[in-house]
Length: 320
Image (cartoon, rainbow, N blue to C red; front, side):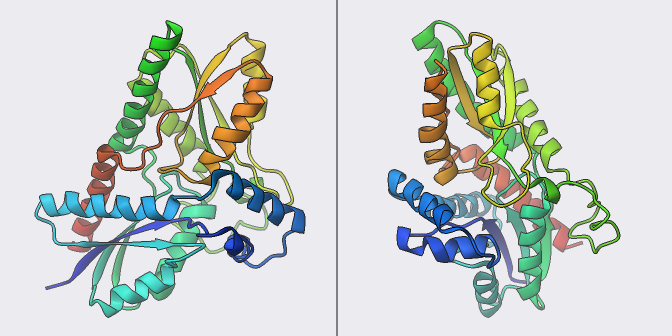
């Protein structure tokens, strides 16, 4: 009998401010970063105290395992991080030691991009050895994912209606990526593909499609917008529009209250707790806009069901 498992992959986060330089070297694959960039990241982490990404992701793994057990599926759930502990290679090696022979792998970045899914997949395959792997390429349009975000958004809208007397406009966001990673260029044509169908990177369209699916489930939204957040400090352009540009446009229409919901993040971490809760709130306030956000998915039972469903389908494909 094959021993089956599920492997969830996430970005990773340092546990202390002192670990940030080493962490950032992992993020940029060892390329040097200016000292002021490192100090700025340290400052952001100091303002939020701690990024809970790792512990929340581990908790999500336990919820997913409980969903699978409830359906009679015997498959331990492991969690691996690309840029910090527990590192993906270490976790895959542990799975081999534990006797795992088949694993359904799910990247907790639902929208498919070479800056996320392709790199995560390559990290797993490099250590898989004899372990048979099913890798979920993307799940941006998963109905339960949209349901999970919509549940959080509907709760926030209810609160805002009670406070303001009417539904408020919504700004959906996803993490920006460097423009060079989502464009087909002469340098990328003919190169080995990281995933089937790679060409024009689908990330931007998949992020917008997730937003559309969430908005469809909350029809009381009077109007919604979409922007890319958290553009990095590396050289070259990043995809937009930015949150700052979009908030400025929203303010020009006389809007005074906005709900911002990131639909590319599945839990609280620095891009939510600092970028949104501190930086974007301050930017919006200077424009005369009150900016609030729904609760992050974190321990959402609907999210756990969504991921468990992906895992079940992946495990089924391994039996074909």
